[in-house]
Image (cartoon, rainbow, N blue to C red; front, side, top):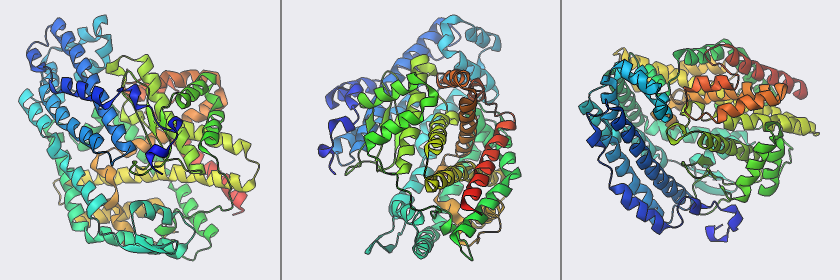
Length: 591
């Protein structure tokens, strides 16, 4: 389908950001004249000058945020439009120049007297910035000089090269083979690989799996060198900023206590018996003598007919989230009526789904809707992101409106869990119940177990580099294979391919990112359970979290919703949810 053939009501309303491309161009010209923020250098010890800097910085940051979001979503709706691709590419140099221009800020603030900084925190005139100043106080010991900060800012594109290189390898240079699928010979792509691995054809899954990994094996030396370079750049930056480890620096950037990371890894490690049981159950249900990693996503429950048009699916999601109250449901309807959402799959459109937004406008949601259960959950998921953005921006000043990545997946997953529980309660068909239980198991396995496994791998890779030991292709493969054996157990064949699965994970180039998926689903399972068992009081607490933005550290924000990740209990509860769901699934499957 071409974009011009899509009904207007199924296209997002980009005019809510800029009325036209010409208006974007007008503001882009303004953004090119980056304010001379350096005029404030050496003057931040004067409260009046500091406040002027912070407010001027806010206004300029709002401007380039709006430019970037508009360019991004217009480019994603149709990548064949040269104008939008050009707009998108023109934004990045401005971000680089801007970063260099304000590089003096944190080093200079870190040199200021603690008593002065604390007086700023307590000053009502600085209420928009109190949390920002608190984090500066916390990170004073890790401040670098203005010259060093400027060099790091100017080096952003250099440090990003490893990720860009992997992206080029993964999306363009990977020697993907041909495969026969649905009676036609076609090139194996990442998307087709995912489709085949979720199909019922065992032999085709194994063929796709072997061919897919053979492509990575052919470039394993290059990919290893790229990833090792990324790890070394992390080690360099952690030393420059005077952290004792890359993990410590990553956690400090999110203002997250190390206990949270340790609690996650320990809880998952201590409860791997349920994961092993699930893998063994999968082998029994499929009736295989040997279970391979190509079988991990094979469907266990067939014969489920659950197809809805987009309109039907959206209405169903609204009903499924009734536990969040009428105001939340009304906001979902508002999003539909006011065209926050781009629905249809069209030529040139970016694949997948996401939510994005900038201060002063509503969020925007990209979908490529298909009439499947998965896509119904995708609606709930992306609207969860959008509601989090909406509430944070509605209740916080610009400086506190962007929540940290640590909590970015919480609201989206709360919606998914609530919708799943609603569907289970409504389901009359035993097959649908089996499917939904299996869906829940696989969601937890993929998001909690698997992402924690990834987190263990990258933690060990960085530890090796920090100890000064050689980090090589063979070392990386050995580490990953051993962790994989621990997580998946003995019911599955640990073939050679799985040793270098790490080589295909793009998130490893955003180091210590993946664990946040695992903590996100942990928090979401706990919050959803509290909403369903305690009702309105829990909903009220949850809305405090949604409205929190970055008004304080993310762990404290989650405490507002009744989840304390500095304790072991939420992690243990999430693992019990997996075990309880598995037991229910086994009963229905008569295992």
